[in-house]
Length: 307
Image 1: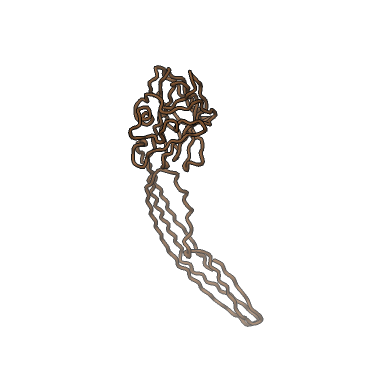
Image 2 (image 1 turned 135 degrees about the horizontal axis):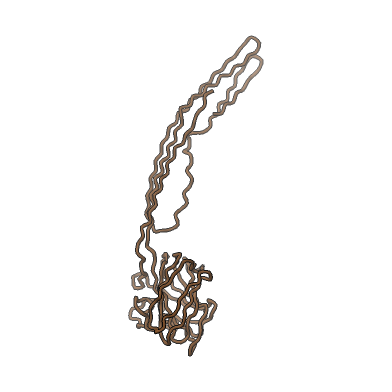
């Protein structure tokens, strides 16, 4: 009885390239990007200023300092005796999900002083998670203070800590996130603050930068399925007394299939989808069963062959 051999040749080259682009600053003045600010917690800061967007045409200089690329002259907003333990702050709704990689954040020690704070992020502005600060670094910063404050990152607690400024002054620092994160809404929450003359805790800067890198994936899959010509001959012989009955069945299977698929895509950088395993093309190979039956003197015989 002959035997068939099934051979698969699979080639799967994968080419992956990441095109690094410069970080893009979020433009609060662009159409469709008029970012909304809302109070977080019971202590109001945004509503008291009569402004609900980072950019307002004709807004006073102190409010413009939030988004302008220059030293903030004074506080843009403040909380009178805000709750601590991350129960007070504000939320910025950018209206679009972006992958945020850098920010310039600033406080104002006009009177009350922010000591620690953290960031939370959400892609739907409903469910928030604390921004992971592992690998995050900060710059020395800029401001109106004659005293340069310390500014540190706690990668375990995922919080920032600021030192004190000179009286009635501002300071901001650039933050480069170790792990860029996707979000439509970003919230600032005050952890601790300390009073000085009074308890009005100020904020001065809220600039953000997103990663516009793209990932280009080119995948070429070539699958060649080759089945050798298979010739199977089955001979069954039954002898009863002096009579012999012989039955011969020959089966032949021929199959040669080649499939080539090429796909190329370019998209914003993101987690690559998992590739599904290759499956055998239907009908090109597999087991074949032959059942033989024959009447012979004295009875019946059956032969089953799988190959």
